[in-house]
Image (cartoon, rainbow, N blue to C red; front, side, top):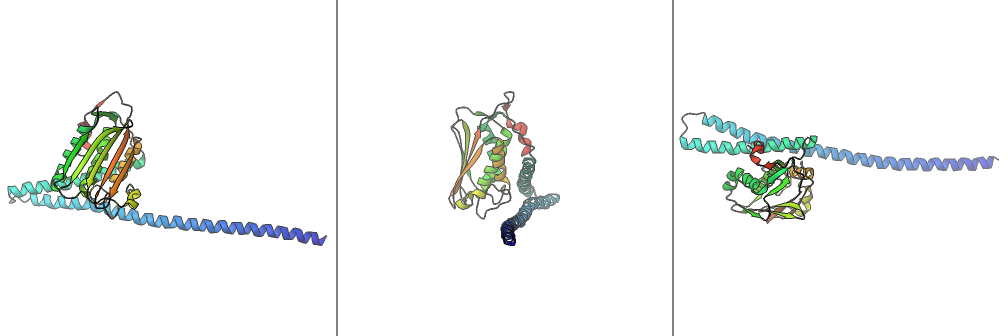
Length: 287
């Protein structure tokens, strides 16, 4: 009788040992997962701090320049030629500051889920013409040539013109920043399988292919090209998120020290009361 009890006790002890072993293994796995999460949080905080530092510089630098040059204009002894030159520089710095702030505000609205598509009959070629005109002082500075190849049968397309304006402004800013001096920036618009395809090609820095999956990360800055400099820190992430809002997608082809080609694919939306978009009504975003 006692022998049977000993066997039963051994069986129970063996079960407890196995249970404790499984729990021990599960604890090890949980500890490793917690360690991984902890490391990710630490890395995220570092990247976020760097991001905020970069954004602060992007805001402080033009603001400081504007204040300094404005103070110089207040000097009544300044010559007319110098007034014109300083006023032009103030405009350029204010443009950069405004662009960065608008991107930050749009990023915040996207994060909060406050943006919704507003579909109208958008005039795509006119939209691109307005954007290139806005950035002319930057293209002139680098002596860049912008071309547009229009393969659309109709110049209108049912989409959100305001959000297209935002996306193309960021793409053009990126292209200008990373283009070679006296280079070309090529736009092409066409319909591909019922969707509007907008292609932006530039020649210059380019992107490392193994880094290309990170270029839409709001907190990521690559060492070479694409999200470095003017319009870069949140610009490409905004493009991706706005495209997702419209049900579209983006693709990129790039080669380091050769250039990059970004293509936006945008499905046609349902027009709201068949409105015709003259984008001037929404132009306050970048005025």
